[in-house]
Each structure stands twice: as C-alpha cells, then as structure tokens.
Amino acid sequence: GSSGPEGEEADRLLALLWLRNAAAALPPAEQLRAKAASSPKDAAARLDLGVRLGAEGRYEEALASLFAAAELDFKLAS
Image (cartoon, rainbow, N blue to C red; front, top):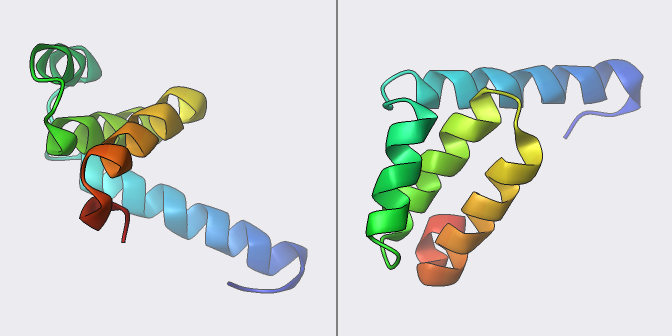
C-alpha cells in the first residue's frame, strides 16, 4: 500500500475502481442475491454478489458475502 493520507486515498480509489470494473459485467444485486440464495454452496455466486454490493457502496453486506464465499472456497480469498 501507499503511505500518508494521499497514498491511502489513492489506494481507496484504486480499490473502488477495481470493484466497479469487476461489477460492470455482473447482473443487478437482486438477481445475484437470488442466485446465491438458491445455491447456498455456490461460492462464486457469493463472490459475485459481494463484488456487486461493494461497487454499490454497500460495504457491510459486501464483506459478509465475500467472507461467505471464502469460507466455501478458500481459493477465492487469495
């Protein structure tokens, strides 16, 4: 990571840009939430939902979904 307030802000903006780019090809959150609910063991569905929610600024929900994905498939966490 970068140091100092400017570096921290740059890191935050880069992460947000990554989330928005990754979410651009994903369906809406409601559709992803339904997919995750209908397939509780589908780690990729939870990962996609977490990315979409993060891109929308819904960080608490995003983290919960991302942690659930990592618990189902640890390789997704790396």
